[in-house]
Image (cartoon, rainbow, N blue to C red; front, side, top):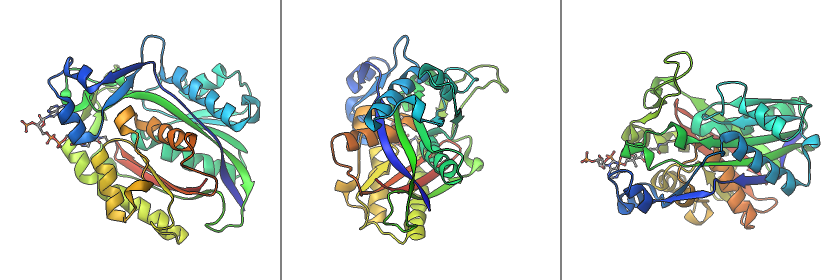
Length: 323
Ligand SMILES: CC(C)(COP(=O)(O)OP(=O)(O)OC[C@H]1O[C@@H](n2cnc3c(N)ncnc32)[C@H](O)[C@@H]1OP(=O)(O)O)[C@@H](O)C(=O)NCCC(=O)NCCS
């Protein structure tokens, strides 16, 4: 059977680092409060000229270099983002043009913080369905541009950045020993749409709007939803927490990540954490974490890797793959 195997990865961050101490000058907060509640110590914030598409392009170029490929080798670009440069056209098309790619096709995926997990699942479906052979998947965000910088309950949590992954078609045996995407488990439930949302949009207010969140409500559901989809991925493939080499979670909050791993019996040393450095970069957080852990040699060929995320909608999901 056809499997979607990882061929390359890349990342890009804005130039400017904003520490918790810097945040203390913007809202009434403290480094201690932020670290204790979230694990975040700093985040990167896009400056003038840095946009979702420019960061996405940088991450894409890094992934192409890592794979030893050029844009000519790609036939589909999927960009997961909730902070597009424009309402339309899609940021993926913008990046396609920046890469000088004028063949194939490109589109955006909007599932907020679960966007990257949704995008990997979509790319895998296109590859297995024979519609694409090599897919460039990008998670790119500039959440700083939709934050209310007077609201301390949200503005301390998020950051900007981009990451990319290239998947390509390869033959597999159809067992959990195959390399590539082994299974995915996606969920959403719009009953929770008002717990984490942006209070504007083209069709409702004609404005961009700002991020609003009931943090405690999100927290309440997070661990249960995340562990459900991870368990489903284990069950489908007949694998267990012991077989897993790496959990690469969406980086929203260290307590949610550690609570989920503990509930599933995943050892803490198998969990990739970058939330301390990047904050919550929404759809970019998983590919940024992948680039960190694969870049420094932790994630190796043949490793069993679980990606998971939960976010606005709510949307949530997990992807199990063998590197
Ligand atoms: C946001 C979050 C860190 C808040 O932590 P919490 O322990 O739930 O804190 P609470 O909201 O109960 O607030 C506790 C107190 O801290 C205060 N507080 C909120 N933000 C603060 C900040 N940045 N600095 C200092 N104090 C703050 C609150 O006003 C509250 O004060 P009060 O008790 O006097 O009213 C936590 O709810 C969370 O992580 N939720 C999930 C959010 C998330 O990950 N969303 C993204 C999903 S993709």
